[in-house]
Structures are given as structure tokens and as C-alpha cells.
Image 1 (cartoon, one colour):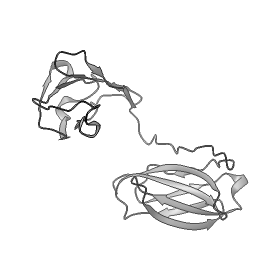
Image 2 (cartoon, rainbow, N blue to C red; image 1 turned 90 degrees about the vertical axis):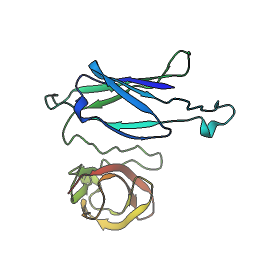
Image 3 (cartoon, rainbow, N blue to C red; image 1 turned 90 degrees about the horizontal axis):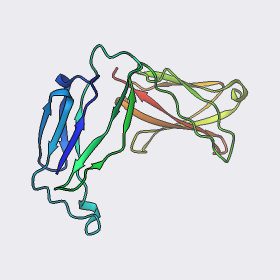
Image 4 (cartoon, one colour; image 1 turned 180 degrees about the vertical axis):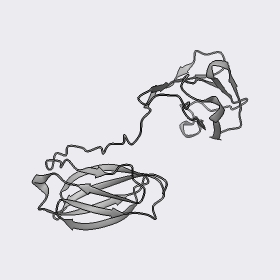
Length: 197
């Protein structure tokens, strides 16, 4: 089996770092960003026979070039070759280069009108705060904070137009929050990103 991935010209090949994989492999990087991972004798079973063991993966990291302008869109698609069959083409991922462009994602909820809550700043280093719209400023709420594995890290009651979060001990990464009324009604949910202190 071989995975072929042609890297964007806006990526810096000198920063390529190969990570973990599900099976032993070799890799090459040729001119024009042609990255190849070869899995000799991988012998994956057919998914109809053993679905759980029919998967494999490889990971890598790479940085954009220093001269890549903000707003550059990086698209990536890989092709997976099994024997002499036509390649299996992966979905295309998209990433836009920028700074401090994370936005809180809120979902309209059928049980109540979702509040337009903002996280300032987001991403954050040690402190951030959730700010409610003016029409919701007088209510009483519970803030629940979860890590990326869904573990509850904080359950905090507050009242007013905002709540300050001091989180110096959290690892960097993605965190989710829920904002609930005192009756337990889900009012908003979203995400925040902690960067290195």
C-alpha cells in the first residue's frame, strides 16, 4: 500500500516532521512536494471480513513558508494505492492561514433561543471571559467547561453580563463550554482554544 500526498507550494518541506503510524512504513519527499508513505506487506483484511483491523494511518506535521501571506488557503488531498487498483482519494481538507481568527461556534437549540455569547480573547493564554449580549445580562447562569475528551473541568455559577475564567493550569488545546440557565436549560455552547503560556 502507498499513500501519495502532493503538498501545497506554500508549505515549507524543511519543517516536515513525520509522526506515528499504524504499521511500519518508509517515506520519501521528492521535488515539488511529492510526499509518499509506503507500507510494504501491510496485509490489511477486507473491511467485510474484519472492519476493526481494516484501517491504517500515518501522521505528519509541516509549517507554512515564512513568506506565505495571511489568508492563504491550503488545500490537501491524498491518494491511497492498493496493489494495482485505482487509487482511493481522500476528502480534501482546507486551512486558511491567519492570526487570532478562532471564533466561537454556537448552535441554535430547539429548546431555547441560543444566546450570542463571545469569548474574549480566543485563543487565550491564561485568562479569558465569556460575554453575554445585553438582553441576557441580568440572568443567572451555570458555565460548564469540558476538555476535548468530554470530561467536565468546571461547573461555575455566575450572574451578570460576563464571567471571567482564570485557567493557567490547563494544557494548551481545544475546550468546549456550555452555558445553562439555573433551570438547566441549555442556552449556548461553543469552544475556546488555550495556547502556550
